Image (cartoon, rainbow, N blue to C red; front, side, top):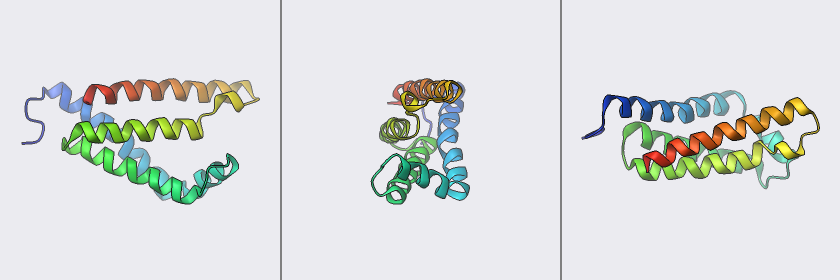
Length: 123
């Protein structure tokens, strides 16, 4: 049975983690595809549309696995890989000239480190 041997707090936390990935996937895949692909192309990411949709697939599969508590460890590993790669592509704070943008991207990177920490707890 799903969520067997989980406390209520663990279930809520796991669903919150999954919601982060599934929620951002829904927003990005429906309203921000061109914007993200253009940013990726500007950063010389190979085949930006293919890479972007591969990232969306990782988000969908990993997020669904964590949400459903089905092979949660594998789903969490998928989401760790996605988070690390997405951070490396989109949050290159060291390339930002504007101090505010640099700070924003560094803050997002730190948040993503915390998300990876939460995912490691699911493994």
